[in-house]
Length: 337
Image 1 (spheres, rainbow, N blue to C red):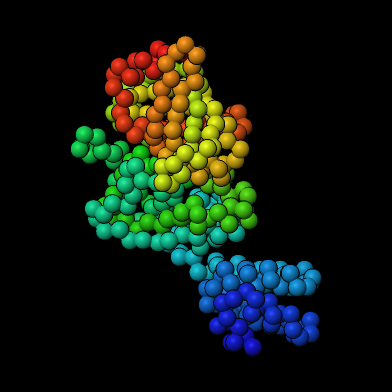
Image 2 (spheres, rainbow, N blue to C red):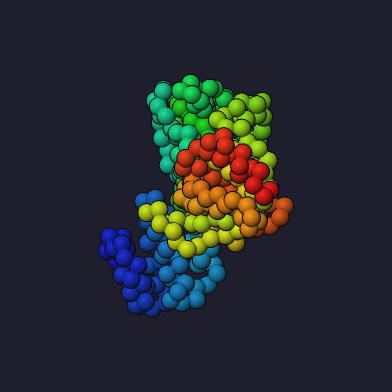
């Protein structure tokens, strides 16, 4: 019976089999198939079986716990021992099942020397865990590679793109490194099952952000255009993937601008929606007094960051499709603001 079901991928087939037979037979079946699938490292399938069985009957708590213990035991056995050593501090920051879930959501890669792991400007919300070797972080300006730092084992890259919905502002190049990665999309279900996991990961990654502090001056130089403080309102218009006006819009408050882009504050109902805005094309229409000129620009959303002190307020950065002339920029700054 177990052998037959292991070959069946559809939930309905499993549901039909669990719905037949006596209660004791169903319990024996569940134990057998969970153990077999766990040994085969089909850990997601074991979770699905438990969920389906709970739909059909109310199991004894002991039976549920026993099935979960099999899953957790097999997950822990399958974790690479070298990872346990490198990531001991992260393990201490997470619960055992949180760390196990995170590990099994990862992809593992060996990058040869000189290979680019992620490019500056890319839209890829993911965390990169350096297991061994080194990774060079740098950014490009006027065709020149400017170094930021070299990351080593036990360091995590990409926190800004993962937690704050931003494009990559730097490049990561392997100097011969074994790296594990987890994309936001691949971890979304786990973040629902373990609601404390995201905040714990965020807190853990803060320590690596501090390592960039000596490069704050370099970071400011990374901007090709000087930013100027600005006040006033702007209307944000969302475009679809084909560049057409969707009719959806929101009012926002400007706080700085340059010839290459603009940043402003706006209200967004949830973090999930904020993440969906990253990389989208938008239109911007300044909101000035009736007697003043109105400016319209288009651009792409490069970053959406939560302003935690004020709830659902977010800051958004948009890169203009066309760089403003100095006259356009001056007129915009002085027009009604």
